[in-house]
Length: 191
Ligand SMILES: CC(C)(COP(=O)(O)OP(=O)(O)OC[C@H]1O[C@@H](n2cnc3c(N)ncnc32)[C@H](O)[C@@H]1OP(=O)(O)O)[C@@H](O)C(=O)NCCC(=O)NCCS
Image (cartoon, rainbow, N blue to C red; front, side):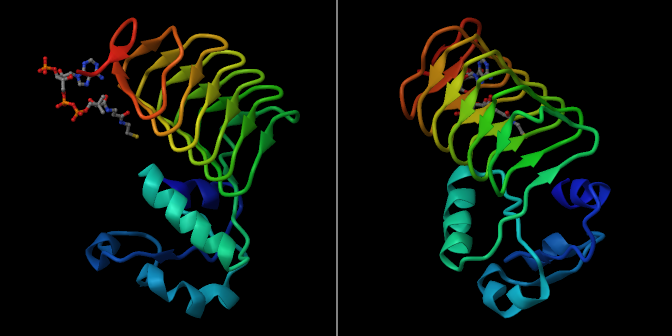
């Protein structure tokens, strides 16, 4: 999805590094080697994006790319709507149908997935994933590495901590502490 979106956004010469060679089967783009071979390929490319949904894994690899002082790409679908007054830090992906509204801030390595929305004045820390069809109302804050599940909604000004998991379809109406998984309407901690 990320490569497809990058291509639609005008990127060319797209290639993957992947530890699982079998993932290359049927892939339209070449897999050049395992992730550890990054240093060997760096001079052939302008930038890199970590196209891995798992937040912990994405955070680790982004930190590695940053340590190598290599440029992180930001991929925004031409079919997304992003305010000129939104701040999108490097390594983010905003996919088709997504909307990022005015004064929203996306930290390094965030994903705003298909048809998700991040409304005005939201603040997403590093490596937050807003899954397809989920919606953050105005002024929501989401801590590093948290995951907003498919079709979830988050009420205005709610604060979600770091490494939280918001279950698919949840309606989050109150703040969520670091590390909690919450599900349901209204969202409650998963027991
Ligand atoms: C919340 C979530 C992480 C829980 O996963 P899990 O820890 O493996 O939990 P389980 O599947 O074992 O379910 C545990 C219980 O919670 C319930 N539950 C799980 N997810 C739920 C959800 N989203 N809403 C309501 N209840 C849920 C299950 O029915 C089960 O209840 P039971 O014990 O009464 O049978 C997961 O279900 C989820 O919603 N993931 C988000 C998926 C997503 O966004 N994908 C996007 C891909 S881009």
